[in-house]
Image 1 (cartoon, rainbow, N blue to C red):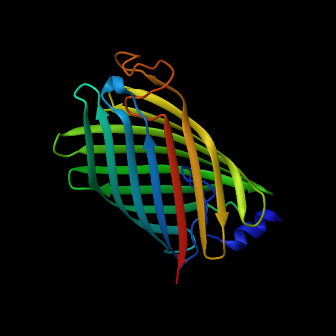
Image 2: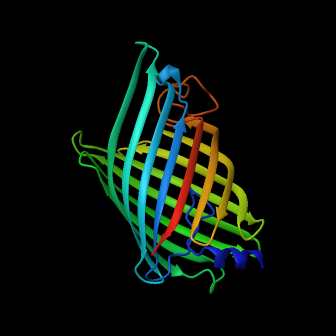
Length: 263
């Protein structure tokens, strides 16, 4: 009963911030979403002491049909850290490009044992190009909800003529406590594959997620500490930490999302 009330309260709301759910927006519905992600604390051994990176995304989402949702993203990022070898603080703010998200629901979870949605997102920033694909599955069971995403990205450094692959898996499980609130847990595994000829590293993150809904807006927050990581290429202890991967990943990721229905 609670799950049904939650769906009626805000059909476009999200229970997770890293894992997409298979449902798409109703035809003609529109929404604005604000994303704020903090990635903090890497290793001073690789020259990134007190590392902080803020990633900001504005998303304009529209339901083209009941099964096809289209979104436009504007991306910016700000990065700062202290180089312990020079004792200088490096900081940079930059426009991180535009992206166009396409989601098509093949199996509606309200009509099938499991929901299935395909996702394609090209991105371009002038110096970099990227394409991301996802397979999104999930379902609701009474007050419980789960979603699992398989993610592949290819990133091109256009000026440097370099390519990097990314393979990622996310899982979210949440329980509705009331028509307004849900709480749960998210897990994320992120892997880098430079030039697709080596598996450079892997990192696992696990942490809580909480979401809140009203009739025309919603918010969700996930806090993901890194619980295990490994450098699989070259020196396995290159970042000075045998249990975490702190050369390309952080000790902690935090993401806040806010969405509001547009008329």
